[in-house]
Length: 266
Image 1: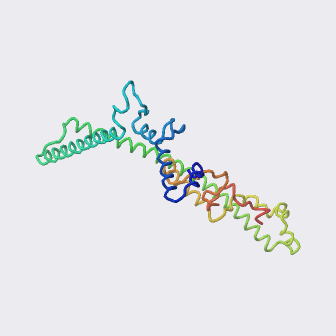
Image 2 (image 1 turned 120 degrees about the vertical axis):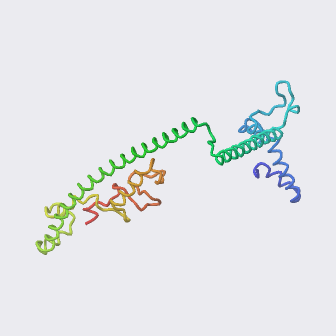
Image 3 (image 1 turned 90 degrees about the horizontal axis):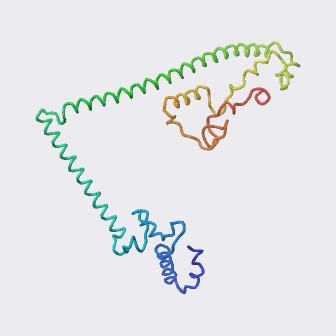
């Protein structure tokens, strides 16, 4: 607005005149100036169009607009109709409640016996369907846990074998290596050629940053698996592959960001 009437405001002699000009411009902008983005209507006419669904014209099928209800009158009429419907619904609900209470006090059913049985049958069928969904979901979770268990047992056996190799390497570096050869172990190339230290090639993927462990990963995956569509997980928009799962740089990192053992970890 300042850009449109800035030159005119500069011609005003005092603050009151400028205020009057701004008010006049705002009123003209709302009721006089037509805008292409608003279906070639003024903002006030476009609001009326949105509320009533009738495009404002001077004449509607040979009937002048002055002979028709205004948008305010139409909204008031609709509001009165809505209030009447709501009042009728409240009165009907209150009446049914009183009838049901009176029937119960007299030891009578408040509905037709056959309709009552059909309603109970529908309720049971609804619960049966829900329990079937629970069983299906539980089976999926059990299968998921069984696969995780088998994988964990395989990894555990592999790590135990790797542990034995590392223990042998510890004895080798502590007791069996001469002082000159021990100094050579400080070179990266030595770790790649010495068979006693070949275990380090199997260490890739065992290093994680900022406290993320395989157990933490398992717990996070289990939480997502147990909730449909992973409702307990917050989606991270724009997260790159291999990036951390918590912003800004995250606490948990994927395998792609593990620190490799060897050149950078020795």
